[in-house]
Length: 227
Image (cartoon, rainbow, N blue to C red; front, side, top):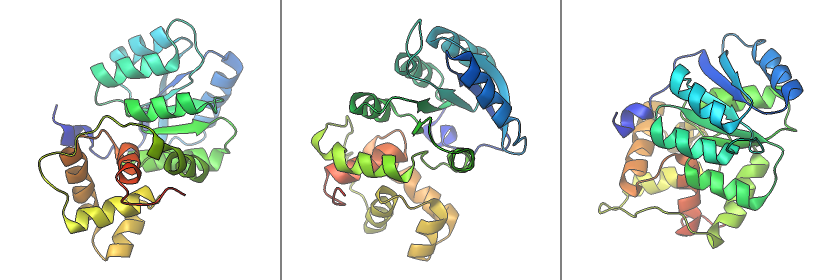
């Protein structure tokens, strides 16, 4: 499967696997998901990292909502396996962990987002809908944390043989500052499809997995200043 095909827009509703070892939270999250059948369809649930990998392989969901603290392979280990073996599956870490090491490891792996469990339902649904459009699932607080801390960390990315065009640099700067695709389109007076095309080219040239890593790259290479 080509990289561009893996970054396709997902048709709604998104098929979602919920992975969390706390049954009460998991069942509550599933009940919440069922209030938005237009956006998500829960296709399975897992209580261990190993089970999350197995069900992802079996069910091929569009999205896995993954906790970090789980038995039999934690969420980050499970995410690494899923992203390596099932590139069409996207992952959002939904966790109580605010540890920097977990956050940056998740970004390094190429997850679609990193959310804390204390966010509200409306914001969760908005961010999931953004992932369906190819955007990163990061709250403003987590995006600011990424920009502040990533400059001192190493992201395994290649600059690529082709330099970014001036327009692509404009796009990656806006992306790194948290602009959505429609906002980038409005700011640069271009179409949303053109924005998507630019982002696809940026990721391919820099050999990055998603726009979260592109934001990190922009900070590391001083295209934007850490906040």
